[in-house]
Image (tube, rainbow, N blue to C red):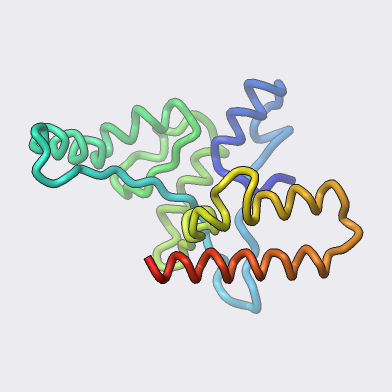
Length: 166
């Protein structure tokens, strides 16, 4: 079992020769405490800088990328799930991707961004530092989970404190 993004299906298929839907499949994140099961997602953003020389062209590109037509091109390639409710689920290349996309579109207010989209880079997004290093060290020597938890708490407090001051 791997808790990962939809792009993992492509890796399982292309690099390991697995058949999606048979050797590898999708299931929703479990509900907690009798509540509704959340959809945990990652997010990407596109930005157009103010007063850029090509601002109008850049805005036109972003407006196009928000259309179901643009999303269909990406969906057909795999490794991409669109929250665009107007995108026909048939645009996705297999039943597993369609189920994943449907869960996102149907989730409404239960969508939750994963930690990689919420944590300051100093804690969760810097290779060889913060959470990354602490968890890598734990994998090398898992004999002290309490010390690892304390190190994670201290690194998070430092990173979030720095993020709130900036």
